[in-house]
Length: 324
Length: 184
Image (cartoon, rainbow over all chains, first blue to last red; front, side, top):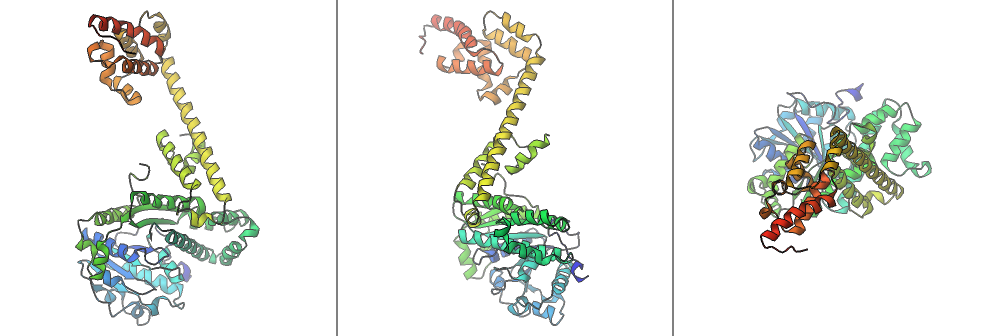
């Protein structure tokens, strides 16, 4: 069945990609302006600095800008050529100003189309995994469009970027809830229960629960046949949290607080991978179209990004944390 | 590892092997988070106060249970040490005066090491050593010395006041000879 075709249902949890498959890291988070493109491009630089090859995919439906972070002009070709003209993915990779880093651009036409079937997304991912590169980093941009969510869910590392601002955190909770609903819907489709989740959620006041954790408990209690599938979705879901634009030591612990809230209110696992401090040099780098990691290689911010890469790679949390 | 306690460790978001001080720290941080108005909490807690109440009581229960569990474990370890000492309590009852050599003798019989005592009491081992060797001139002023003696005594389960008054006899004799006046 097309749905099971290559579908890595448990993103990031079941097994690491095999040696010849590239690792896919998706960067999302729901709100614009938190620095997803900055984090994605900087992680790419950090990875390339270790000698690995990176391909970045700009999947931002709000407008592709990743090329500016990578020091080049907007590429002419895009994923439209993959979907419509069947051009092989590797021919769509544009070299960037950074050795070992290439860029593929999605564009509005190709990516926000509701006509991209799920099977086509699976096909894209299969091609991504078969690319002769070590890492693919996907900048998902903001929002919860189904294509964004599906791409997020298919990755090996589900990375979200937030800033210490209540609106960013609120959007993050929405984004993750949407991703979970999407994942549940896909998982339950074969059991015929895909509408159950949303229907039950909309009746939550009557049914006596108010958050995602309550929804899961209710569904498992009342639908024994789909309970195992639901638990598999929830248990297999893990998000790597990145806190960007930190301005003070007090703000650092917000990342750990979000991790706790995910567990207590949604019942999901997350890892606080690290924080990146606010650096005034970032804006200068963006405006002059130079990769920040090159321009400010010795900065504390650059070092933090290096640690971030290592922690995300090993699914490790920020060490010596808040328990300080 | 006691699996009953596992759920309490999980409630504090710790691994089952966490130490008492890690439990304390986690309890304080979680309590502060869920009692407060952190920007991490407010966006999701607005719709439900009940979940927050449940979480807070879960945290309190976990902390209470884990603290009790650690205390029980410490008592078991302590009485284990005592009963292993066998007729040691008779020995101790026979002591006429707890001077330096007596304290050293009892500590050796109990198998307690100075460095362990340093870790536990935070008093440097060299001070306990000076006490045992009656290196009076190296010891701190009486007000501190009495404090060290009490910590030493408690660690070995001796009567602290008895140890202090016995030891200070010897110390006072030395101090008088040296022409020092004891300050309270």
